Image 1: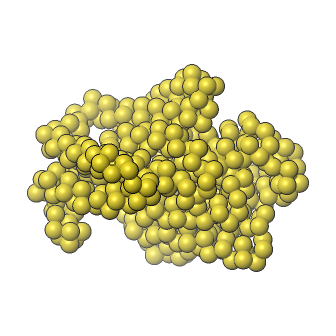
Image 2 (image 1 turned 45 degrees about the horizontal axis):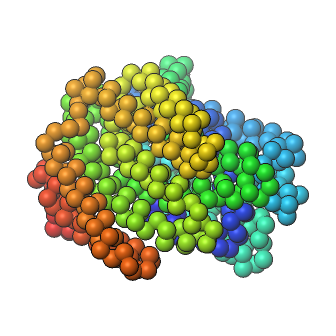
Image 3 (image 1 turned 60 degrees about the horizontal axis):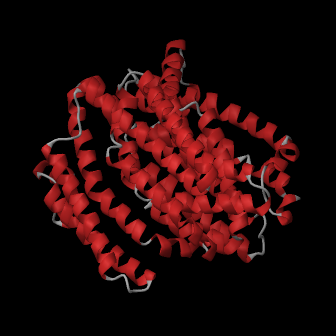
Length: 481
């Protein structure tokens, strides 16, 4: 739902505020996300290890308190420094002449989303560490996006055009951060959180858990957010903002196949951490279930997104049609990352702390090599090739490590059956596109999208075994799978 809501909200932002303004917004947002990944010290992921394994209630609260203190305060100080230095930072970014004079004020204002983002990351991660998945996802993905859209529309109606999108982003984060405090209060004692002891051993273990997952988090964030920042810095004038906007649009659409991976990433991290302390063998059913479900859903989903990519891009702007090659490459890469992506959170939570670092370095090295070979000639498409190659190598390295260290391979007869169902769904969507090639692209895309759901239902029906269907719970019974 989060990816779907973004595809609804982001075109609205482009139509209201223009592609160049949207591109500048994407660049600044991506820059803040990169800084947030550094200043959180990956303690959002570290809490997934430390809280489930904490020996007492006080230790749980102490770990969360420590994570908040060592991330939010430095983030606020960094935001203050960047805000003061905004006049010297602004000339580095490529924007149109109409925005050049206002860019220092935009940066000085927008950078305060950094401490808000960090506080939100830690608070919602603390809830997730208590296996409270639904409330966090509704808060971060649904309500944050809805609040941003409402504020943006209101500001646009009031005539606030230049700063409207940036103010809407800040306001939505402030609202969500306030709601995250209430979320914390549901799963933790706020009074105890204020005074919980933080002995040296607890601080050391919490920090080590976070730093162990920092390399893969930085790599993932770099693959997502560094390309538009580089485009915004490398190109001149409004062309840099437009290029960043086009890449940002393609990235948003290409994030849809990551729905499945993100779902299991959220869930498998704390479950794996808790299960490894009890019975590591019980991680295997979770891992294989995630892989089978991803194979059935992601391949047809990628196919329908590629088939309807030209129509989806036109929702944003007529200029966005130029991003179709970028979108196709990113979609293929995300599909490759997602199908076996369940290995990544398991390795991060249960494996040796050096393994995530090795995976990240391998992915970044491949991305840098592919980018060096392709970006000078292919531009944004080459950037997409580099990103896709990097994420696939990083993700599949975790598969090999899990197979080698735990004997936990993804390829069994059940996975082959699920993969065959996913490939069949993809082939069916492709044949439908060929058969109805004479239709207008919007009608063809609508037809393929409508047929996507029965094809996935059929894949789940035929590709999952009895235990997998039972694991779907109420949803499986309602859908009669």
